[in-house]
Each structure stands twice: as structure tokens, then as C-alpha cells.
Length: 158
Image (tube, rainbow, N blue to C red):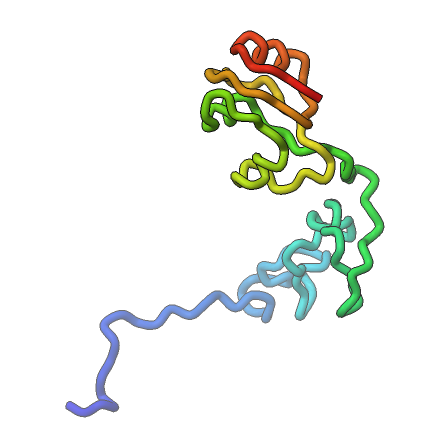
């Protein structure tokens, strides 16, 4: 036995060749008419019959432009809203990490890494409970957060 005499155990199976005449009748297994019955035809992935592709319906990423090296933002989509004027927010339960009697300021929170920036101000919300007496200076508060701080024995100065 030599290499050219070797045979596989199972015969090869070839894919069905559609649309070349023969015993399948006139349409040769491709149905009648339409884009997919023609020679060389096919529909690209994501094509929805002339309608917008799915990814074209959503807002574009801001800052990216078609021109290389350009940082001009795209026109905003009609449903896309950006809110630039919101202050940083933290909840009361985050403030339990400070020692009793500490004067808490936005600068201290920035130093500890609790917030990223203080440009637009910092607002304290009432989620969670405050277990320590703390002094607060330079914050905005929700009404329920003020109540919880005073109930815990803390103080608020402007």
C-alpha cells in the first residue's frame, strides 16, 4: 500500500449546488422571482429591504466625526438628551466612613475619592441611614436628607 492508494473511511459529502438546472425543474430549488433567486444574488447582513438598518436608528456617539482628526460633534438625535448642569450626588450611607464630629466639605470628599469633581456642586440625598454626628458645609441637601442629618445629631452650615 502506498499514499496514493489510501481511501477515506466515509465518502465525501458535497454541498447542494442550487440553481444549475437538472432534475429540480425550472427554478432549480430557488423559488420564483425575487432578489434571492437571481444569479450572484445575496442580501448583506443587516439589510432590511431598503429600510434603515437597525444600528442607524440609534443616536450617534458624540465627539466622533467622519473626518479624521476632527472632534466636531455629530448633530444630536431628536431623542438624545444631554444634561450638563447636574451636580454630583452622594447618599447618606456613604458618609458613615468618616469619624464622629468631622467637618465634611466637598473638598474632603474629593480628597477621599468619593466624588470625581465639585465643579457643579455636590448634593446629598437621603438613601441609607447616617449613624454619626457630622458637620456639613458647602452642600445642597434634599429635604429628607436634612431631616436625617439633624435626627442623627449632625449640623448643617452654609
